[in-house]
Structure formats: structure tokens, C-alpha cells
Image 1: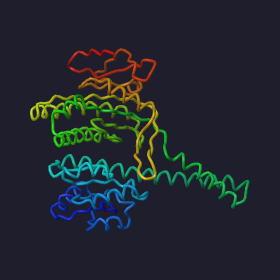
Image 2: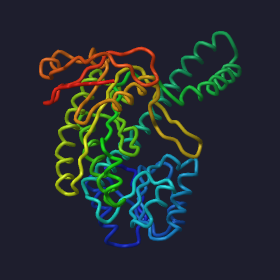
Image 3: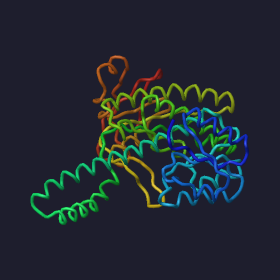
Image 4: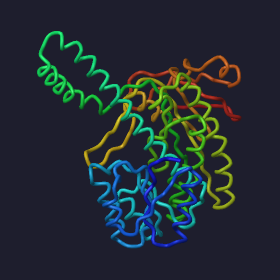
Length: 366
């Protein structure tokens, strides 16, 4: 069990029990607070792995907003339980996830696990960087002591620390980046009520993130009907490309069953298109002092996003960079088809692309 409990603000005993049950299933402890003021003044809040609040009044939302605005708590993940009337306000106050009374436990657990994992990875990364930085400072001190006084050594190191602060905002990594986009989402949003769309998106992201986690991927962004996942970042993986492709195939399979349920339940037709690229990215916190997101940027990310936009429903498109990173075992067990070179939006030269063939004949037009 972790030594740092998750903080919970909930007045109803039944809601407390529900939250306690979720966290227990994730091997997490929780500590309850009685008021928003008690939450904001709780000791050790800046190292809290997760804050869960049950919103029934504006004062609780204001506490969520204050947590997001304070530099020491801006990165603490926040989960809100709220009725439909509070959902939009909860997100505007800085909530990372909002659940209703009808949200399935499986969906809740998938999102909680993702937030807790990201928080833990963030702390691990900070610790490793601090240790590495101190190690480098000690090496520099041992070198500079040969040439200057101890007082000047400390001043030089302090100035270098100031310059290094801008560098630690991001780090280079070689990663496989995947974008998965739902097809036909605009029509779904027009046909169904907002609450139904919200429920569908929860099911959608729960299914896709579960597949990503099975292959040790990191979910970097959920936006609208799109998911961005990285493999090989922030923890290096020699087989990141293999993991990405296997996760993509499982996503297509899992989403196929989900889409079939939706068609029976709501009479809607949807699909999933996936794009994958591999290469150098910058990984780090992007934003302001009040709020930051750990994300990936770079041309590798842009190409993956463009490939996902061109992928048809039920199709995964990937670049030659990913193709060359696959091992012999994957190639012998996975049919891979080369497609005509494709010129992506915003690029002047075509790139080589590949896919895993579907049952239907591929006829890519561009």
C-alpha cells in the first residue's frame, strides 16, 4: 500500500464507501476530509497522489479551482463525482475526470489507474532527474575544484543550475506515438443526448486505455473522440514499436465489439482509425505555472496524427519508421501490407506507409 493516501471530500457515507471501494481495488488508501477548507489546508497536499471530491455545492468547485491555481498543487490529479448539472462546471474548475452516478466501475477504475500511474511516473521522473542533477553537480565540483576556489565552484554550479532549469522542462526520447480516432462521432453527437454521448465516450476511452495499458503504453491525452498514447516514454522500451502495433490491433478488436453494442442499443454506426509513427519526440510538462500537462511534441507526433486522420474505420496506418522497428517474430505472425506513398497534409513529400490488411480490399485514395 502506498504511504501517501488519496484525499477524499464527500459528505454522504454511501459515496464515501463507493470511493473507498474504488481505491481499495487499486491498492490505494484514502483519507477523508469534512469541508472544502479542510481540504485546502491539509498537510502534504502537494504530494497527494489523487484528490476525489463529491460536488453538491459551488464551494466544492471553488476548492477544486484553488487547487489547480496553486503552484504546489496544480499537478495533483482531481476526480469529481457530480450530477449532470455540475459536470461542465467541474471541468471548468480543473477536474481531470468527472463521473456520474451511472458511470460503470470498470470505466472509473481505468481512468483512476491512468491518473495514478501518471502521477507516480511524474514523481519517479522528478526523483531520477534530481539524483542525476546532483550527481552531475558533484562531478562538476570535483573538476572545478582543481581550478578555482570552493566559493567560486558553488557560484558556477548555481549559475549552471539556473541555465539547466530551462532544459529540464523537456527531454528527448525515442518513442512510438499512436493516435486513435473514432469515426462518425459528429453524427453520433447529433443523434444522441449529451448524457448518452458522455457515456459512450467513457466506454470508448475505457476500452482503448485498457488495451494501451496491457502493452505498457502511456496515455498522454484524451481530447474529444481522440486518444494519444506513447510507447517507450517516459520509460524507455526497446520494443516500443512492437507494443504499439499489438495494442492497436487489440484496440480495433475491442472497439469492434463495443461498436456492435452501440449499434444494437442506439442504432448508430461508428468505427476506429489508428495512426502510428516512431521517432524522436520531446517529452515534458507544457503549460504555465498554474497548470501543466505532461505531453509529447515533435514531427513524429504530427505524422502519427495525420496518419490517424487518413486511416479508414477498422484500419491502422503506420510509417516506415515503425515498420523497420518491428522484429522478425511480429513480421512472421502479423500480415503487413505496403500501401502507395502518401502525401500528408502540411508536408511536401510523400512518405511510405503500411497497414495490417483487413478483411475488405484496401483501396486508399488521396
